Image (cartoon, rainbow, N blue to C red; front, side, top):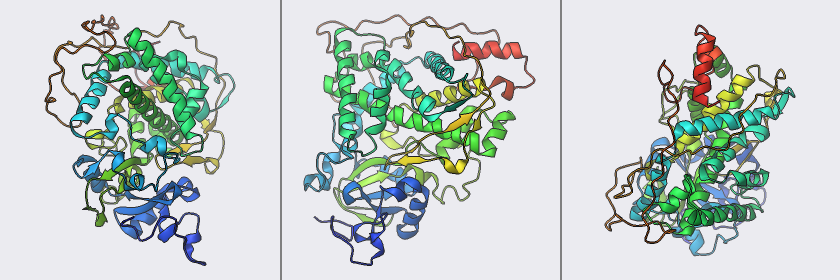
Length: 521
């Protein structure tokens, strides 16, 4: 195989060679998996940057070669230039020559599927347009109310005990509860779904089976929505004028569910850890000088929920960061190393408040379209937890915290806390309400990807009917009644604050009324 790497896959280093170190593989290349990569990814990035610059050769599971892009500007170029770096994994030379088998531990991540993240050009625009149009129909305010209810239900499970693990009892469950509700399958939420979503991105021996479970759940959902549409995200994808097939809908739901779950669960855990261990965060939150959304944004710089995204594949021979990239080479978007690139952050202790130039949600045409939902889950969830348990303290020494990682993310295993026991909060038991905005006109449609303006497809999609109801026009659904607006006006978007801490001088009863209206309880 022709390769830019100075080794052949599988070649063993000579005796006494430092490459026998577990973190170093054939050719002296560093592994992006294993103990070193999991326990100290920041240290690994520093070594790679010192040895290779802004683009470094690395080894994936099975010592398969790839490139990790470390530089901020190089990552922007990688994500914004699909003509050079495609998302179509079928271009990967290692797949073409058999170096990577179909049952590779990372197969659930790189195996080509008929979804927008593996497409470029017109196909990407059509599929992503369906996703972003459907996301625009979500009633964000309604979702925030559900996030608050779900958060308080989770807190009720441990509030009287005086101790909890905020990873396994809170952060790991809240995003899945919210996404199941948005998708229209709250009855499918259970522990098995949570664990399958966690497992399938870790490169484990059970990752393929976990992926199959997720696909099975979503296939049943799409079959139901073909027969009985409802005001939920799954139905909107099924009905969209882009006329996706059942397989396309299932795979897009799978993509969105796993990306939203993994990233948001990690984000919540990382924000809570920083609030509990970093004096800057706790002091500023308690003193009213930082809101939870600001803490979330700082965390997206310092501890992004995805450390890297696999992958991009070189369309032809090219150069990036001084490295010669060959056609068919695999590249990873290095989110965490880009956020610590000395060219953009010479001082890692500097406050990044108000700066959203991080790559936590990637960039270019494939930038995460659901990042606002992820932010809302973290904002409201963390805020609800801190309001209920304002005296939270870490239950162990910070040095005892442990992580598990893979090439995509670094997951906090547990976050033990202690607090003064508090009574459960009475919550309404009403079923989930409709989370849809007013339905948009069903005539001509346009692609609404926020990444860049795109032309309409060459073929006309005007007047096309949903696949589940041939010959019938899509039925408009009434918009849900708007919630009452208090006399004091509508709070600014994202203002999920802790009343007592943020505005100590405000009348308590007024703040309680505004908070209860905004958070939906």
